Length: 205
Image (cartoon, rainbow, N blue to C red; front, top):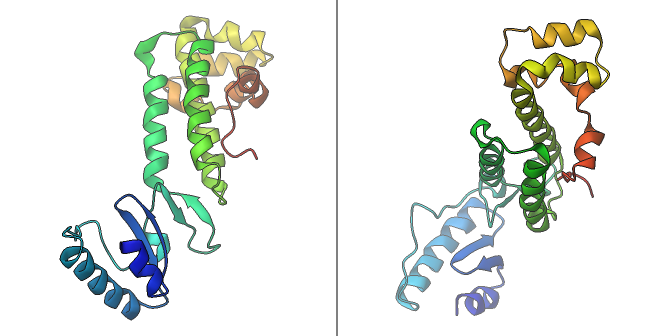
């Protein structure tokens, strides 16, 4: 009934279950539409519009089914909250106490990332996805560095890092997360290494 009424009034809208976005041309039209829809939903459908989750706002300040739009380019973009949920999942899979081999971690990551990409792959703004790709590789470098432990120097040298760089990195007082961004780790564990493990790129099209 809500869809029919919005369509009858000539509104452009998108709805999934009880989540609905109605697009209008001005703040005033939005406030008028909000009042009318709230009244319709309450009186005709006997439902309640949650005032804490509802608002009249610019599209880039709202999210819908995990998406929003970019403020400048007006293109479809993954919402920040959806990206944070993905990062929480990656943190869970790469936490230090798990102790699994990197190929096991990569396989689990691949399953999660491919599912996420299947849903969010229609996003048009790719810069946040490129940032996530880099962050995931850094998390994996950090995981491996912690696993190598005292063998870090030997592992770096085996992967082509110079004696000086390997020594400075392995003897550094900095923690694993900071070291995961060093040139030594980037050289030892480049992009192609993670590609061979089957870790997909979210930004790749």
